[in-house]
Length: 214
Image 1 (cartoon, rainbow, N blue to C red):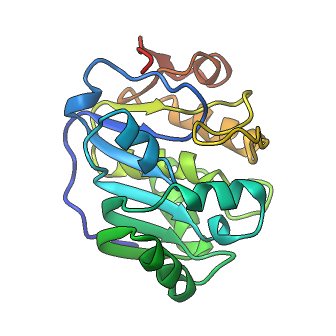
Image 2: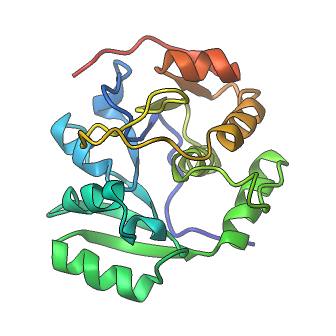
């Protein structure tokens, strides 16, 4: 059993990813915020509460353009719980990089792929243990928000079509789109889940709610 040292949310929860031009539900300013990789920089720009949880992949410490752009946004950010997916870069090396950037956290949970897959299986019944089935870090963050009893849980800054990131001009492509669609379609059965992203709602059946731009 994988346990995370964070209290259940039991209230409105915003999962903020990094797709360009995120739309926010009207209650976003009072929500528990879950960020993905460098989306804490977007949360700060939008004057949202400091994230209670940030899910970060070790692949963010690679050498791609998108990785360099993401790390450049981390300076002086902080999160409550850092959930680190221990792939691509071990946490010891990532911690040195994060500390050098001024990124801070109150607590940390380091998860391997198998632990991540087990959490998804426990929450959804969907097996994501294979390479072709593994979801993006952002969609895994949605699963965590549901496990932490967020109600409702609203996805913002997600896209299954649009490339690029809100903090970047390089228009890097999205990965894991097919796996994300499959898992999100399973999650659509959960009445606590909604999204402000029209393309996500259209392609997965997740309830669409009105959102406003920054």
